[in-house]
Length: 404
Image (cartoon, rainbow, N blue to C red; front, side, top):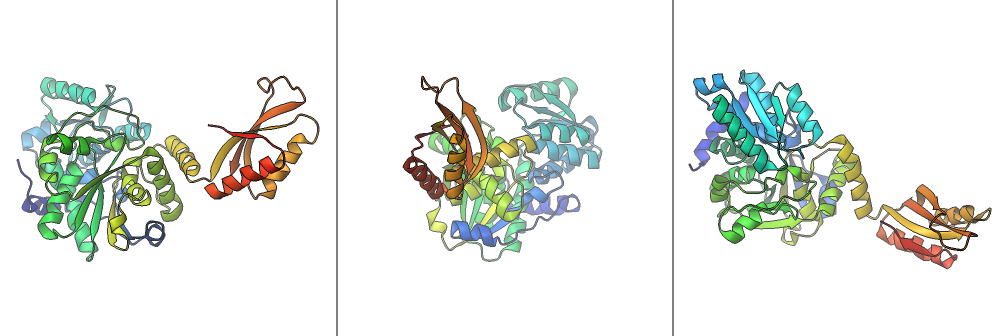
């Protein structure tokens, strides 16, 4: 079933009473670091923290009275489940969600708090989907696909209608892609209303669903790998989503996990905004130099969600600091006599670096009992500062080795 611009406009009218018109402000700091004129469509400001609410509400409102009475079920790593749980509660429709075991804890507990029945089942999305299908058959529930249901795609496309009204002179839209529902909805709107706008899809190198589908000319299953962008880890692009997006997308790029971590850090530092990995990939692509033709252009980044586990966020920030050259670790050999450690600290301080942690390793420091290895974690300004620190340490007689 194709999704048309008329379907998306109808969805916008249908869901208007329950969806936030998310802001799309200009970002001066992100513009400065990317060389483009950046605006951010902040879907992390929806009630449940992601764009998925749009499609969820539209799909629920499109159900027949009988299907609403029986309830719905879905497999989801989190944001689709959250959208269904919230709007199911508002609309009086019972919601059951099956989450794979890698789903972030914050998404599991939030779904439960919103009133959904949550089952954690399966090592990946495919296994969670199989369990959801079983429940649908046994209990008479309606399965709502998180990224391939036409009503879901139409709901997600309402984001693009808003964006084009908010930003009149946009040259390019950079959109994350996992299962493809958001990309498909955006693509239908953009190429119908402003076909000159470049539409660029971004995925993590650890997912690669859309690129694999383009190479095979059909959706194909991609092996699951660990990724910060868990919202993109659907393992396959939806059939309807692929049919709609494949001929409308102008470019597809992928970014490494290090760049995703750094993009999350930049959003926290520069935009004072918490985003999840899937929402950070558009900025990551810009920062990694994957889109050089967009320099000086007005570029809209779709910030799809902000549901990242706080425990994971702290680790991701540290990963970003390491990638940015602002946190580094090395081992140094020092005298184990009084003053040995003090001299090392003095040299580090003289370079303007700050010691975050230091630990002695006497058991594995070799036969010379007068010397000891110390593992140092230091805060620096950037990679050039790290290089200066290392040169200075070697100049003062401290043999060092990089540590992981």
